[in-house]
Image 1 (cartoon, rainbow, N blue to C red):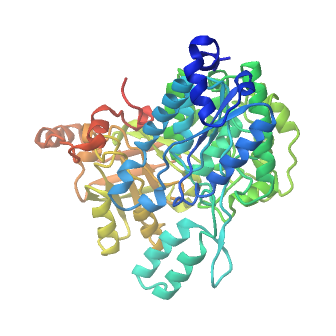
Image 2 (tube, rainbow, N blue to C red):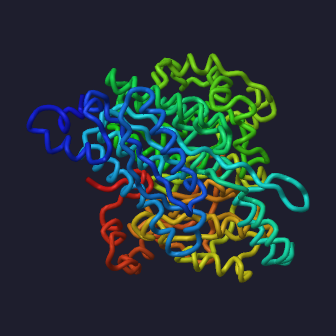
Amino acid sequence: MTSDQVKKGKERAPHRSLFFATGMKRQDMKKPFIGICNSYESFVPGHCHLNYVGTFLKKCIEEAGGVAMEFNTIAVCDGIAMGHSGMKYSLPSRELIADSVETVARAHCFDAMICVPNCDKIVPGMLIGALRVNIPTIFASGGPMAPGKHPVSGKDTDLNSVFEAVGAESVGKISSKELEKVEETSCPGCGSCSGMFTANSMNCLYEALGLALPGNGTVLATDPRRQELYRAAAKRIVAMAKKGGPLPRELVTRDSLDNALTLDMAMGGSTNTVLHTLAIAREAGVDYSLERMNEISAATPYICKVAPSGHYHVIDVDRAGGIMGVLKRVAAVGKFMKPGCPTVSGKTLGQQIKAAKITDDDVIRPISNAYSKDGGLAVLWGNLAEKGSVVKKGGVAPSMMKFTGKAICFDSQEEACAGILGGKVKPGHVVVIRYEGPKGGPGMQEMLAPTSYIIGQGLGESVALITDGRFSGATHGACVGHVSPEAAEGGLIGLLQDGDEITIDIPARAINAKLTKKEIAARAKKAKPWTPRVKGGWLERYSHFVGNASTGASLKQ
C-alpha cells in the first residue's frame, strides 16, 4: 500500500506514534488509509452541511475496513463573491484547491481518496489535484439545493431569479417589497444552487466521466438517498484502495471526455464546463480541443433543458431518470458516446446506462422531440475570437441566434453594471465587457449580475453581451464569453470602440467586428500596453502565469 511509506517498519515508529496520538490503533496500520477531501465552510450554502457528510463518510469508511483521514480545502461561493472584487479570486481558487489536494495526499501517503466538493471551482480543482496524485478516487458531492417558490406565482425559483429581480426592480417592474420576498424564498436550504449552473453541471459530468456513482449530480442534498450514495462510495473506495484502481488517469481519457461533453451538450450545461474540461484534459495529458467540442455539439441533440434555460430544475432531472437517463437517450444517436468506458462503480458506463429508467418524457425528451438537433453549447470563432469563445446556445432566444448591433464598451464588470442599471444600454446594443479575462481581471470574473440586469430590464431579446470574462451557469441570453485572445494580451475585444458594428451568428459559429485589417492595425498601434490591475498578493502572480480561456485558464508550466 502507498501508506506503507508512513506506517511500516521500525524506522516508521515516530510516524505511528503521531498517528496513535489522533486515536488510531495498532491494528489500523494494516488497513488502507483513505483521505476524505472535504470543502466544508459554514457560510457557503453548497458546503455548509459537508461537516456532517464528512463525519458520516468517516464512519462508513471505517465500517468498510478502512482508516478515514479527513482534511479540508477552501470553497468560494460565486453568488456571494459576485459583483465585487471578491469574484477575482473565484477561478484562481481552483489552482489553490488542486495544489492543496496534491500537497496533503502526497505528504501523508493516502492509499485512496473520496472528494467531497459541491460548488463549481472546487469540483475541477479537486480532480486536477487527484490527477496529479493518481490514487483511486471517488467524487461524492454535497448534492443540489431544492428550488424555491415565487411568493406570488408559486413557480420554482433559484438564485438567478433574485439577480433578475434586481434588474426588474431597477426599472419599476416590481416593487422593493416584491424583491425582498424573492430574495427570502429562492434559496430554501443547503446544496449547490438548484439549476443547471456550473456546480451541478460539473457534478453531473463526473457521472459521465466515470468518477462518481450514479445520482451524484442530481440527488438533493437533503434527500435521504444521499446517505445511501455516501455509504456506497465509502464501501467502494475501500475496495478500490485494496485493488489499486481504477485510477483517475485511467478514467479521464479522450473517450470519457467525449462522454462527458455529450452529456453537457444534451443538457446545455454551464459555459464554465468548457473552461474546466479543458483544464482537466490538460492535467490528464489528453489532447482535447474546442473544435472537438463543437463536433460533439453538432452531433448531440439537446433533450434536457434545465434552469436557467428552461423551467425545470435538477430535482426534476433526478425524478425523471437522472444523468444515466439522459445518457440513455443520447447513447442511441450520439456517435461520440463510448459506453465501454470504466467507472468507479466497477461497471462500465454502458452497464449503468442500461439500468436507467426514464419516467418523464418532458424533462428528458425523446430524440424525436428534442429542443434542437444540436447541443446546448457552441464555440464561436472570428476576428473577435481567433482562439474561440463560448455561448450557451440553449439559453438564447430564437430571435437572437443571429444578431448585429452597435458596441457599447465597458472596461470592467463594475462599469458595465453601473451603465446597465443607469440606463445607458439600449435595444440594439452589444455590451462589451473587457479586461476581465484570466490575465486582465485578473481571475476572469463571472458576469451573472450584468446579464441578469439585462434580462430583468426586458432587454434579453434586443441586447447581446460579449466578454473576455466568463459567465455563471445561471446566465442565459445572447451572451458570449471566454473571448480569446483577451484584451490584456492584445485581443481585438480590447480595441473596440463605442458604435462599432458587431455580428454574432451562432448557427454559423461566428463572431466578428465590422473592421478592416487596416483599421485594426491602426488601433493596435495606438493602444496602451496592458498593466496588471492588482499589485501584491497572489493575484498579481496569477495574472503573470495564467493562460487564456482557450487553455482552460490553466497556469503555464
